[in-house]
Amino acid sequence: MSAKVSMSYWVDDVGGRVEELKVEIKPTGYRMAPVTQWELLVADEDKKVEKGKPTIVKVKPIFIPENTLVGPLSIMRHALGTVIDVVECGIPGRVEEEKCISKVLFIPVEDGEIKKDDLIGVLKVFYIRTGLLTRIFNLSPPKVEIKRTSTELNITWRDNGNVFRERAKVDALGYTRSHIGVWELLVADETVKVKKGDVARIKIKELKIPPSTVVVPLSVMRNAYGTVLDVVQLGRPRKVEDEKKIQQAIFLAVDDGKIEEGDLIGVINVYYVGIEDVKSVIEEKGKESVTLVYRSGDAVIRKKVEIEPFGYVRKPVAKWEVLIADENKKLNYGEPAVIRVKKVRVPPYTIIYPLHMMRHAYGTVLDVFCDCPPWKVEEGGDIRKVVFLPVMDGEVKEGELLGVLNFYEVDVERVGKIKQFYEKWIRMSEEEYMEYIAGLQ
Image 1 (cartoon, rainbow, N blue to C red):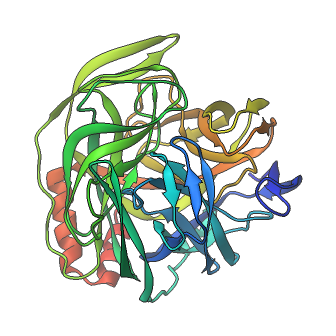
Image 2: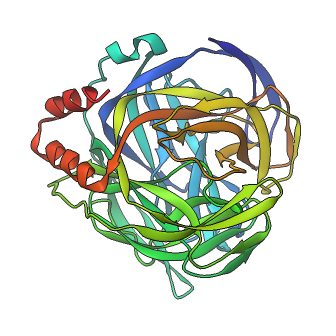
């Protein structure tokens, strides 16, 4: 059923005048095209940044076509931090409309200065066809051709505390999606004390990320003390086509506490995609021992568990669910706020992913807050609170739209079975494979 919500937005520019608009939200879903396009986020100004202080950075304008979703490409792309959202001034546009992006929300992990022409992030553009929930299975995916563009820009990285900047020509193209992913655990490899609002680079047990994969943090907070914003590969940035080694996670603390070696701090989705020559690269692994750290009432529980490796096949259709504030909440710039929202039920076998492009004037939803043992994807759960990051002082009011979540249905399988699905994708044509996964519904 449809619902009316209040949307707050900047009338002119971020930090200018805020107005409210009543909008009607209808139960809507979409079918995705099997391809995704990249757009480069290139700084259009020099900007000094301070560790942990969310910063709005101007980028060279990017025009996004109608019927698209966007999301940052994970694995930190700038030496000083990561892009977690993009900003559209004025009333946030519907996905069915064209959009112009000229600013991003950047989270610094070090003090320093972004220089004009620095590559600060990459944006994924997903092409979709929308419809009422009752009709999405009958929708056909839009026809899309991946384009290739080249841009002169600065690539940056850190090594031994020094920032390196190199001029390069970078291609923006895209990839075909297999709809296949595996989960990788982010396990702390050091003990670190954190305070609420800290943005910490935490050393993790090294992960080898195969070539031709993209990474996305798995939503629903996996540690009592905070959430993972991104992951870090040390040294010069590598292409999606290359194998990568992940040694650190960017962790935002929502409470004071201590991360101990062996603690699970997050999980990432590793999606397999097609760019050039695609080969079978899924490795089967054994169980992994970790410590779960979660809340139970006022207590923080630590529990050692063994987790088996699993992956999934994602359905080509999805739906949206809105996050509506269920309380008034004062906001302090840069301090993560846990905000109660009207209950949203996440069905079993569903993964969630934020609909990027800030939906509230004062900040963005980073994750779903979990004050219980993190639920398994196979079980589902109820969303009652979210982690909201303010970009300035302000207030959230009850009934306001805070954000939107994408809900994707998945079939969960052991990694050995997922490997078989992936090898089918390599062998089949695009049309055959889309018919195949549609038949899994």
